[in-house]
Amino acid sequence: MGEILFGNFNGYFSTTDFKEPALKNLNVYFRRGLFYGIAGKVGSGKSGILSAILEEVPYYSGWFSVSGTVAYVEQEPYIFCGTVQENITFGKPYDEGFYNQVVKVCCLENDFKLFPTGDRTEIGERGITVSGGQKARLSLARAVYSKADIYLFDDPISAVDAKVARRRYDDVIRGILRGKTVLLVTHQVHYLTECDHLILMKDGAIEYQGTPQQLSEPLSKLMI
Image (tube, rainbow, N blue to C red):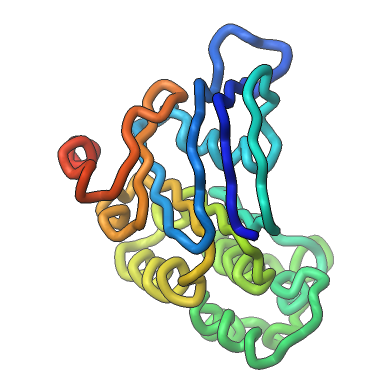
Protein backbone atom coordinates (compact mmCIF):
# COMPACT_ATOMS: atom_id res chain seq x y z
CA MET A 1 0.00 0.00 0.00
CA GLY A 2 1.12 3.54 -0.66
CA GLU A 3 2.60 3.10 -4.15
CA ILE A 4 1.89 4.75 -7.52
CA LEU A 5 3.11 3.59 -10.91
CA PHE A 6 2.84 5.33 -14.29
CA GLY A 7 3.75 3.58 -17.53
CA ASN A 8 4.05 5.54 -20.80
CA PHE A 9 1.15 7.70 -19.61
CA ASN A 10 -0.18 10.35 -22.03
CA GLY A 11 -3.12 12.46 -20.93
CA TYR A 12 -5.13 15.59 -21.60
CA PHE A 13 -7.01 17.86 -19.21
CA SER A 14 -9.97 17.85 -21.61
CA THR A 15 -11.31 15.04 -23.76
CA THR A 16 -12.63 17.62 -26.26
CA ASP A 17 -9.29 19.30 -26.95
CA PHE A 18 -6.49 17.01 -28.07
CA LYS A 19 -4.13 19.70 -29.35
CA GLU A 20 -1.43 19.26 -26.74
CA PRO A 21 -1.05 16.60 -24.02
CA ALA A 22 -1.01 17.78 -20.41
CA LEU A 23 1.32 14.89 -19.58
CA LYS A 24 3.62 13.14 -22.04
CA ASN A 25 5.24 9.71 -21.77
CA LEU A 26 5.10 9.71 -17.99
CA ASN A 27 7.13 6.85 -16.56
CA VAL A 28 7.64 7.02 -12.82
CA TYR A 29 7.34 4.77 -9.78
CA PHE A 30 6.44 6.39 -6.48
CA ARG A 31 7.58 3.97 -3.80
CA ARG A 32 5.96 3.48 -0.43
CA GLY A 33 7.14 5.67 2.41
CA LEU A 34 9.29 8.08 0.41
CA PHE A 35 9.11 11.85 0.11
CA TYR A 36 8.92 13.08 -3.49
CA GLY A 37 9.41 16.64 -4.62
CA ILE A 38 7.94 17.82 -7.93
CA ALA A 39 9.05 21.13 -9.39
CA GLY A 40 9.09 23.06 -12.64
CA LYS A 41 8.05 26.35 -14.16
CA VAL A 42 4.41 27.46 -14.44
CA GLY A 43 2.57 25.21 -16.88
CA SER A 44 5.23 22.52 -16.80
CA GLY A 45 2.76 19.82 -15.73
CA LYS A 46 3.83 19.35 -12.12
CA SER A 47 0.29 19.74 -10.73
CA GLY A 48 -0.91 17.59 -13.61
CA ILE A 49 0.74 14.57 -12.01
CA LEU A 50 -1.42 15.02 -8.92
CA SER A 51 -4.51 15.49 -11.10
CA ALA A 52 -3.71 12.27 -12.94
CA ILE A 53 -3.44 10.36 -9.66
CA LEU A 54 -6.85 11.76 -8.73
CA GLU A 55 -8.15 10.51 -12.11
CA GLU A 56 -8.89 14.03 -13.29
CA VAL A 57 -6.73 13.74 -16.43
CA PRO A 58 -8.24 11.55 -19.16
CA TYR A 59 -5.54 9.56 -20.89
CA TYR A 60 -5.37 8.09 -24.36
CA SER A 61 -2.38 5.78 -23.99
CA GLY A 62 -0.34 4.14 -21.28
CA TRP A 63 -1.56 3.24 -17.83
CA PHE A 64 -1.21 3.97 -14.14
CA SER A 65 -2.08 2.29 -10.86
CA VAL A 66 -2.51 3.51 -7.30
CA SER A 67 -2.16 1.20 -4.31
CA GLY A 68 -3.60 2.63 -1.11
CA THR A 69 -5.77 5.48 0.08
CA VAL A 70 -5.06 9.04 -1.05
CA ALA A 71 -5.38 12.41 0.71
CA TYR A 72 -5.14 15.64 -1.27
CA VAL A 73 -4.33 19.14 -0.06
CA GLU A 74 -5.25 21.53 -2.85
CA GLN A 75 -4.24 25.13 -3.51
CA GLU A 76 -7.78 26.37 -2.84
CA PRO A 77 -8.93 24.70 0.41
CA TYR A 78 -12.57 24.07 1.09
CA ILE A 79 -14.85 23.61 4.09
CA PHE A 80 -18.36 22.25 4.39
CA CYS A 81 -21.30 23.08 6.64
CA GLY A 82 -20.79 21.55 10.06
CA THR A 83 -18.64 21.97 13.12
CA VAL A 84 -14.92 22.59 13.02
CA GLN A 85 -14.36 19.12 14.45
CA GLU A 86 -16.55 17.53 11.77
CA ASN A 87 -14.57 19.33 9.10
CA ILE A 88 -11.41 17.69 10.43
CA THR A 89 -12.64 14.17 11.21
CA PHE A 90 -14.65 14.09 7.95
CA GLY A 91 -16.75 11.08 8.90
CA LYS A 92 -13.97 9.12 10.58
CA PRO A 93 -14.22 8.01 14.23
CA TYR A 94 -13.08 10.58 16.75
CA ASP A 95 -9.70 9.66 18.26
CA GLU A 96 -9.03 12.29 20.92
CA GLY A 97 -5.28 11.69 21.25
CA PHE A 98 -4.56 11.71 17.53
CA TYR A 99 -7.03 14.54 16.96
CA ASN A 100 -5.22 16.76 19.48
CA GLN A 101 -1.89 15.90 17.86
CA VAL A 102 -3.22 16.87 14.42
CA VAL A 103 -4.67 20.13 15.76
CA LYS A 104 -1.29 21.02 17.25
CA VAL A 105 0.89 20.30 14.22
CA CYS A 106 -1.58 22.09 11.92
CA CYS A 107 -1.44 25.19 14.13
CA LEU A 108 -5.17 25.25 14.90
CA GLU A 109 -4.97 25.72 18.66
CA ASN A 110 -5.12 29.53 18.49
CA ASP A 111 -7.99 29.34 15.99
CA PHE A 112 -9.98 27.22 18.43
CA LYS A 113 -9.56 29.93 21.05
CA LEU A 114 -11.02 32.48 18.65
CA PHE A 115 -14.07 30.41 17.70
CA PRO A 116 -17.15 31.05 19.92
CA THR A 117 -17.42 27.42 21.06
CA GLY A 118 -14.01 26.06 20.10
CA ASP A 119 -14.00 23.13 17.70
CA ARG A 120 -17.75 22.67 18.23
CA THR A 121 -18.37 25.96 16.41
CA GLU A 122 -20.52 25.71 13.30
CA ILE A 123 -18.85 26.99 10.14
CA GLY A 124 -19.95 27.29 6.53
CA GLU A 125 -23.21 28.72 5.22
CA ARG A 126 -25.06 28.05 8.48
CA GLY A 127 -22.27 29.10 10.78
CA ILE A 128 -19.50 31.64 11.17
CA THR A 129 -17.20 32.72 8.37
CA VAL A 130 -13.62 31.52 8.53
CA SER A 131 -10.59 33.17 6.96
CA GLY A 132 -8.56 31.83 4.08
CA GLY A 133 -5.77 30.88 6.46
CA GLN A 134 -8.18 29.00 8.72
CA LYS A 135 -9.59 27.14 5.73
CA ALA A 136 -6.07 26.12 4.73
CA ARG A 137 -5.28 24.85 8.23
CA LEU A 138 -8.56 22.92 8.41
CA SER A 139 -7.95 21.37 5.01
CA LEU A 140 -4.47 20.32 6.06
CA ALA A 141 -5.76 18.87 9.34
CA ARG A 142 -8.49 16.95 7.50
CA ALA A 143 -5.91 15.33 5.25
CA VAL A 144 -3.58 14.41 8.10
CA TYR A 145 -6.43 13.03 10.24
CA SER A 146 -7.50 10.73 7.39
CA LYS A 147 -4.41 8.53 7.99
CA ALA A 148 -4.10 7.96 4.26
CA ASP A 149 -1.33 5.92 2.66
CA ILE A 150 -0.48 8.61 0.09
CA TYR A 151 -0.47 12.39 0.52
CA LEU A 152 -0.63 14.80 -2.40
CA PHE A 153 0.32 18.41 -1.61
CA ASP A 154 -0.24 21.06 -4.27
CA ASP A 155 1.98 23.90 -3.06
CA PRO A 156 0.51 24.30 0.46
CA ILE A 157 3.47 26.41 1.61
CA SER A 158 3.55 29.12 -1.04
CA ALA A 159 0.67 31.29 0.23
CA VAL A 160 1.90 31.62 3.83
CA ASP A 161 4.76 33.51 5.40
CA ALA A 162 8.18 31.91 5.77
CA LYS A 163 7.79 31.05 9.47
CA VAL A 164 4.42 29.32 8.98
CA ALA A 165 5.68 27.56 5.86
CA ARG A 166 8.69 26.20 7.72
CA ARG A 167 6.58 24.91 10.58
CA ARG A 168 4.07 23.34 8.21
CA TYR A 169 6.93 21.63 6.39
CA ASP A 170 8.78 20.47 9.53
CA ASP A 171 5.82 19.45 11.70
CA VAL A 172 3.51 18.00 9.06
CA ILE A 173 5.26 16.96 5.84
CA ARG A 174 8.50 15.89 7.50
CA GLY A 175 7.01 15.30 10.94
CA ILE A 176 3.72 13.55 11.56
CA LEU A 177 3.65 12.21 7.98
CA ARG A 178 7.17 10.79 8.00
CA GLY A 179 7.02 7.23 6.68
CA LYS A 180 4.04 8.01 4.45
CA THR A 181 4.25 8.36 0.69
CA VAL A 182 4.30 12.12 0.15
CA LEU A 183 4.27 14.03 -3.15
CA LEU A 184 4.94 17.75 -2.77
CA VAL A 185 4.45 20.13 -5.69
CA THR A 186 5.93 23.51 -4.85
CA HIS A 187 7.54 26.66 -6.19
CA GLN A 188 9.51 26.89 -2.94
CA VAL A 189 12.25 24.70 -4.34
CA HIS A 190 14.64 25.19 -1.42
CA TYR A 191 12.43 22.74 0.50
CA LEU A 192 13.04 20.07 -2.14
CA THR A 193 16.70 19.64 -1.24
CA GLU A 194 15.52 17.39 1.61
CA CYS A 195 13.29 15.06 -0.42
CA ASP A 196 14.16 11.44 -1.17
CA HIS A 197 13.51 11.74 -4.89
CA LEU A 198 13.11 14.79 -7.09
CA ILE A 199 11.16 15.17 -10.33
CA LEU A 200 11.65 18.22 -12.55
CA MET A 201 8.93 18.82 -15.15
CA LYS A 202 9.03 20.68 -18.46
CA ASP A 203 6.29 20.96 -21.11
CA GLY A 204 4.23 18.16 -19.57
CA ALA A 205 7.09 15.68 -19.41
CA ILE A 206 9.70 14.62 -16.87
CA GLU A 207 12.89 16.43 -17.82
CA TYR A 208 15.00 15.09 -14.95
CA GLN A 209 14.53 12.79 -12.00
CA GLY A 210 16.87 11.60 -9.29
CA THR A 211 18.06 12.61 -5.86
CA PRO A 212 18.41 16.33 -5.05
CA GLN A 213 22.18 15.83 -5.03
CA GLN A 214 22.11 14.34 -8.52
CA LEU A 215 19.96 17.20 -9.79
CA SER A 216 21.67 20.03 -7.96
CA GLU A 217 22.51 21.92 -11.16
CA PRO A 218 19.03 21.97 -12.81
CA LEU A 219 17.43 22.54 -9.40
CA SER A 220 19.66 25.55 -8.79
CA LYS A 221 18.39 27.10 -12.04
CA LEU A 222 14.82 26.97 -10.72
CA MET A 223 15.94 28.84 -7.61
CA ILE A 224 17.07 31.85 -9.65
